[in-house]
Image (cartoon, rainbow, N blue to C red):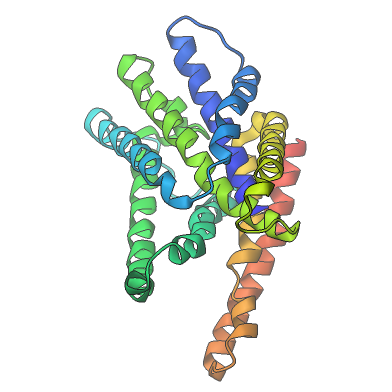
Amino acid sequence: MMQAGFCCTYVIFVAQNLSEVLRFWGYNVDTSMLILLQIAAYIPLSWIRYISYFSISNLIADVFILYGFFWLLATEGPAKDVELFNQQDYPVFIGTSIFTFEGIGLVLPTQSSLNQARQKRFPGLLTWTVVGLLFFYSFFAGINYITFGGGITPMVTSSLPRNGWSSSVQFGYALAQLLSYPLFLFPAVKIMEEMLGFPRRASGQKVAKNCFRAVAVLATVCIAYFGQSRLDLFVSIVGAFCCVPLSLPLFHLKLNLKLTWMDKIVDSFVIFVGLITFFYVTYSNLALWSK
């Protein structure tokens, strides 16, 4: 559910950015139509069997993201209406923050694709990667909010001034998310294929697997179609409802029997905080959506 939720948000993000880019150049294409058109790209991409094949597309996506980041730093100044704490929408912030857990589904597939020598170095590499991402997310979000202040929109690229350069940033971000979609769908379809009993390597099952993956793509696009009106709340709900349960150390308590009493206290406290976050943020976001 978590990985599928991420894919749904990517579909919405790509469609809304492309719609604004096309509108700037004089073409009015409805966002709903752009959501449906993405099916033609995602179904063939979902048929890729090995995660290593996504390395090039993911590298291209990273280049476009960095391009937008440095363009923002170079062209925009700080806003005057920066608010340190938003009392009205902080549940949305909490859910969106937890949404950054999105890459966790790729950890195990990435580790399993490495050779034995690299797998030994993987825990340390993962730790430093998470630390680096923590600083990057915080810095990137802070820069965006300081730049746009109260005028910032749920989709930050919509806050950019309307000109050719900003359109290139939006197009780059849209392409980055489009290329990231199959990478985030990969763990979800692998799990569902195993649940349905598909053999890991069987050439005779390729057609059945491809049909199943096409159905998975259609399901995410369908959800995105009906959730496009409130991207901010959709992201926050996915974060609270899908990411919080998976990020809790509940399974760690069951699998690791050598924990000290202090470890158990800390993990139990995190579980308690996570359960409160799960119910409160999910309820708050659903209430905001109903308004």
